Structure formats: C-alpha cells, structure tokens
Amino acid sequence: MGQSKTVEEAEPDSACELIDFLRFNTYNAQRVYAEQPMSVASAVNRIDWRPLEGFVYAVSPFNFTAIGANLTTAPAIMGNTVLWKPSEKSALANYIFFEALEEAGLPPGVINFVPGEAELTTRVALSSRDLAGIHFTGSSAVFQSLWKGVASKVDSFRTLPRLVGETGGKDFVLAHASANASEVAIALIRGAFGYQGQKCSAASRAYVPKSLWGAVEQELRDRLAQLKVGDVADFSTFMGAVIAQASHQKLSRVLSAAKEDGAVKVVSGGKTWSDPGYFVEPTVLQVSDPKHALMTEELFGPILSVFVYEDNKWDETLELIDATSPYALTGSIFCTDRFALHQAEAALVNAAGNLYLNDKPTGAMIGQQPFGGGRASGTNDKAGSYLNLLRWVSPRTVKETYLPTRDWQFGA
Image (cartoon, rainbow, N blue to C red; front, side, top):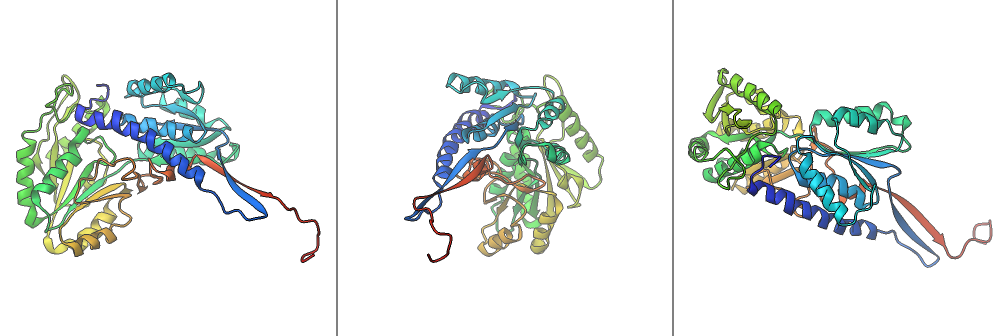
C-alpha cells in the first residue's frame, strides 16, 4: 500500500523475489566458500573468504521491497556489518522485513536499520574510516555522487571501499518486421506500464518497423483503453499512483511539453490528476526524431516513446539503439527471423546487461536471469548471483607446508 503497488506486482516482489534472494544467496555463498585452490602432497592451500574490514552502507530504493532485502542480507551473509538507509518513500515495507529478520534471530548490530535524510546520512557514513563498501540501487546521478564522494577522501578509509550499484535505464524494445504485432503490443504494455513504469528495467523506448506499426498502434490503443488506473486494493486495477508529488509534477511537465511539441504525436493517454492520489495515465508517444529527449532521458513513469523506422533501415536502427542512450540495463528484441535476431544480439552486445529475446525487458527471476547493467546503469555485479557475493569478501590465501625446507641451497 505504501508503494502504491497492485497485488499482482507486490506478491512477486515482497514475497517471491525476497524469499528467492535469501535462498539463492545462501546457496551461492556455499559455492563461493567451496571455491578452493589445489593442494599437493607436501602442503595444503586454502582460501579464507573474509568479510570486508569495516561496514557496508546499503542504500535501497522505494520501488522493490526485495531489493532492500538483497542490498542488506547479501553482504551480511558473507559476514559483514551493514548500515541500511532505506528510501523515505517506502520505509515501512523495509522495516517490516527488518522486524522479520530480528524475529528470526538476526543478532543485534549485524544489519542496522537507519532511516533518515539521504544527504545527511550519507555524509556521516562517508566520514567514517570504517566504510568498506556501498551497496546501492537508485538513480545514476546519486550513485555517481557517491562514487565522487568516496574518491575525494579515498586516502582516509581503512581499506578501498567496494562500490556496487544498479542504477537507471532507458530500456529498449526493438521489433523486427518478422515479429508478431500482438506479441509486441502486449510486451510494451506489460513492460512499460507495470508498476506505473517505476522500474529501472521498464520499457521506455521502442523501435517498431513501419510495416508493423499500424497493427501495434491499434492494439495499444484498444488495450490501453481497457486498462484500469486507480486504487491498488482493487484487484481489477492494473496501475496505481506514482510514488510522490515530485514524480507526478515531473511527469506532468513532460506530458504538457509533449502535447505542444510538433515532433511528438500522442498515441494514447497523456492525462494526469492529483486527487485522490498522484496519478499519470499510461501514455504512448510517437516521436519523429529518434534522438528526441523522450528517447534518451529516463522518466521513471508510465510513458513509452516510440520511433517508427523504415523496414529497410534495420542495420541503421541497430546502430541507433546502441548509441542513443547512456544507459545499458535491459532491452528486448522481437524477431522470428533467426539471422536478423542473431545479428541484433551481436550488434547490441553492450547495449544491455539483461537482454530478452521475444519477451518484455522486465521481470528478471533470481537464479534464472542474474540482474544488472553497465554504462550509466551501474557496475553490472549481477544481483542474485555469486558474482555479487564476491564483492563482499576479501580473500586470504593460506599455504600450510608439512615438510619445511631445511637447506638453503637449491637441489640439496
């Protein structure tokens, strides 16, 4: 309720994904500990997987309860003490999970729940010489500011802090002329408007061939007309309110500007209202300029921008997608032409850390699609996998010799 998240969106998050993080992180921790060097007859070698020398500062976002669980328990499972600063917009859901940890027997002081003003809390955390790592999910701008803050005082820390961040996205959906128009339309609706588009993985820009656009556009219009926006306690609601007034005001400004922009056509939606909550209608905008701000800037709301390309411009469109946005989090390609599909997969090799073929770009499953992206989207340390856990340990190699050498000369 505090996140304005429907049951269909909340249950996979605060129950399923949260539980999966706990189950898979403990399983993957065993995989890490089991990774050991070779020993020989005269000596045994081992790796001690030590926790970091200090505490981990975990900064969690408003949109997923499960993310807060992972940002904190992943370092804790590897032996670290964690300072948890939750988003003030969804502190309640995080606190309920924290209470569950305490009830389950988590010793006091291992994970420390400290809601507070973001800038002040961060300033205090970064002033400690014992800061050993930052586990962050949020905006690219904030993560970059944290990186700069650490770099500016790097000589004051006991050890070089580990910085792990999953940040923003301007995630793409690319349709090939061979794609099924209905499948593309459904993926755009679910990918762009699930949880009001307030997902770093949400479909935000789409590239549709001219031969397919007519059918896709019509289906978008028809289905969005049926999509219910309102009270998330109503099981028939598909979309609730956006998270806060600031978000509502930003999205309202974007839509107002779009309606006055000659390079933009409102395909569907475009309305906003603020009573009884901060609501934004699911909106599809068609742009004539593929470099338009609507195709490059993250909005974090239920706004999908579409560029219609000429069917014979497939190769150019691949280059366009890769070069348009500074982000590289998720993307999807709808295509039944196997040659074109493999061509696109190769051309977009660095455009997304999670790539979906003939599926929407949201809904990564723990244990199935380790999540994270590069470029301005973060450090790509793959939440939910052993790769992320490796960031929260400092290995020590130990060699124990059974037969120490007793002569200083070689060959003696």
